Amino acid sequence: MGHYLFCRKYGVWATLPFFIPFPSLFGTMGAFIRIRSPIQSRNALFDIGIAGPIAGFVVAVAVLWISLALSVISPGLASLPAVQLQYPLIFQWANYLRHGGVPLSQWNLHPTAIAAWVGMFATALNLLPGGQLDGGHLVFSLAPRAHRSVSALVMVTLLPLGYYFWAGWLIWPILIGVTGLRHPIVPRWPGVDGKRRTLAIVALIMLILTFTPAPVADLSLPAFIHQIRGH
Image 1 (tube, rainbow, N blue to C red):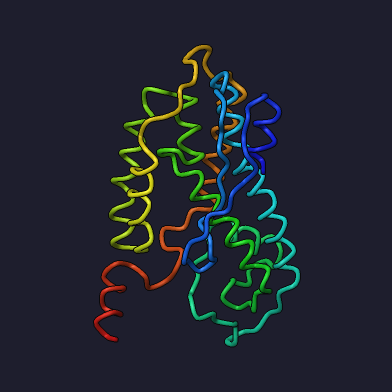
Image 2 (tube, rainbow, N blue to C red):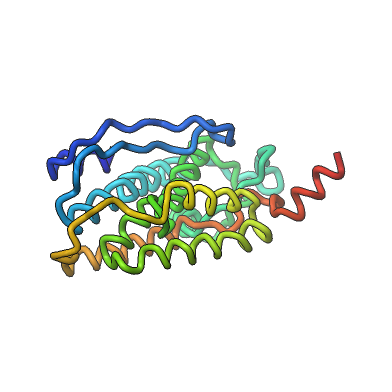
């Protein structure tokens, strides 16, 4: 919705968000909008690209803060879902601010914490700096010539992450490749101004805070193969 509203601001014809059904833990791979008219400048592309992650991050932080307030301490008896989620840095910081030194493992987290986790995970995915992801749009708006090489670097980096940490990462180089290393035509000049370059640093911080090398525990490729053989 953040993307859509900024498209309206810049007079770009875009659809409302479409949700993508997918047989994942959450039943979806997120949402996208179709842009059906040219984007007039790199500044406009940057604003449209970053609006979605910022909106999602703000909502997820609010839900996380509320969920921690609704959680109860349960030493040794913390609820363990069937799928063991690993928590990003933002969860650790928020828990420290809310509860001090009591680790997350000692808390029976309220179910809305899972909603916050999904929001953080989606933010991290969107901010990956490659292809047609929001992070890819930001890279292109900042340095158009670097977009293809940065996208290729992200694809290569995700391969060992998929092997050693979480097998799901192996899907994303394919998706980045399918969506294309190319980019919609946007005027090369003028470039992005200084305040937006500062916002790019904010986007990088959001990626660091929400990214988890192993979002789901014990689901590296060797572990996944071992589980299949065990069954």
